Image (cartoon, rainbow, N blue to C red; front, side, top):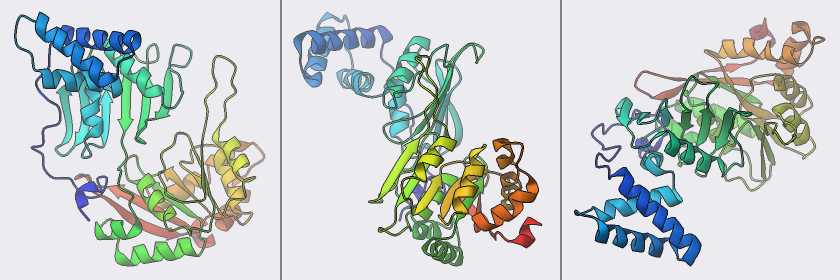
Length: 378
C-alpha cells in the first residue's frame, strides 16, 4: 500500500508539487461568463456544458485580446458545480487542512508543511462559496447563528465563524479526511502501530472490549477509531453519534446520527446526550460517540455499564490524561455525580485507552495502549 495515502500517518514527500495554479484570469471576464452561463441555463434550459461553451464563445468574440478558453472553462465549471478557487485544494489528496483568515489568501497543510498562497477571491465570493458548501448539510450561517460545523459532500468537515464574533472577516477551516478506508493492517504496514499492537487491538474488538481513543488535535483519533470499527463483525449493529458526520464505514448494519443546532425558526437543539439516548433504543451491538467533550460522557458510561460495548474519541495529551478527563466530564451532567461514583463506573465501562500522537514531521503513531483497571484509576 502506498504510504502517501495514509492521511499523514506517514510524512508525505514531493514538496515541489504545484498546489494552486498561478495563472488567474481577469475577474471581470470570469464574472461575465459565469453570469451568461447561468442565464442560459435558467432561461434557455440548456445543459451546463452547452451553456458554458456558448458563453465562452461570446466572450472570445467580444474580447479585444486572446483568452485562455480551457482555463476559463475550468474556472467556470468550478464555480458552477464545485467550490470555486478552493476546488483544486479540496481535490488534492496530499492536503490535509485548509483555512482562510481573510479574502485573497489561503493557508493549508500540504506536502511541504504549512503553506500560504494568494487566492483569487474577494469577501463576497468567499461568502458565496461557504453558502454553497452549507447546502449539503442544510445548516445555516447568519448573524443569529454566527458559527457553524458542517460536513461537505466528500466527508470533509467545515467550520466557519463570521463577524461580529470574528473581528472583520469570515474565518473558514476545512478538515479533510482520507478517501482511503484504512484498516489496522494498513496502519501496521505504515508503521503507525506495531504488529503486536495491531493484533492486540483486533482481538480486543473481537472480544467486545470498549475502547477510548485519545490524542491531541490532528493526532489521528478518527482514523484509528474508523480502523477499529472496521474490525466489527458484519452480523453486529453499529450506532454512531457525532457533532458532524466524520466516520466513513462500509458496514452493512450501521446507523449514523449527528447533532442539530437550534434555529431561529424555533427548531430545538438536538445534542449528543439526546442522540445517545436515542441510540440505546436502536438495539446497538456497538455504541460509538465521535468525540466526547461534555456531559454526554455520563450517558456513555451508563450505557457501557449496561453491557453494550462502545468506542469514542477524546482530546487529551496522554492516556492517563484521557482517564483523568473522563473522571471530570461526567460531573457536567449534574451536581449529584461524584468522583467516588465515577471511578468504579469507569472501571466497569472502559477497557482500553489507545493514545495516538503526531510528530513534527506529520507522522501519526499509537504512542501507548492502557488497560483500564482499579489500580490505574487509583
